[in-house]
Image (cartoon, rainbow, N blue to C red):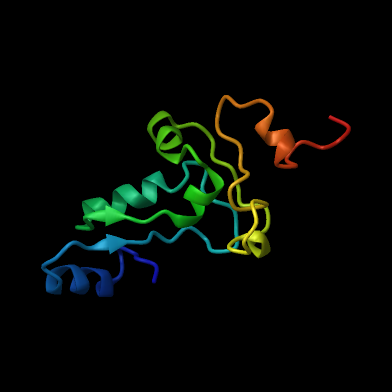
Length: 114
């Protein structure tokens, strides 16, 4: 379930739930990630009372997501949702980390004529 701090349901859940609340920010399912990788959405949820934030898809596409969020570096976009969770590396563990010039080519993110 996506959490939206502007919705009454989120505030009601926070008020009723005394334990750790893990929130999943709305980041446009099926569309591109926000340029900040979800940082602004996560900060809004934390300010509204969430204790932890889940960022599943951005973590799959960015093996170094924490570093990217801290430094404001651009995030990788998910290439093909159909490849996620299929048992192979393609689209699951083959996304490039920052500073790895060959990773983008290995992952098929660089056109052959580039």
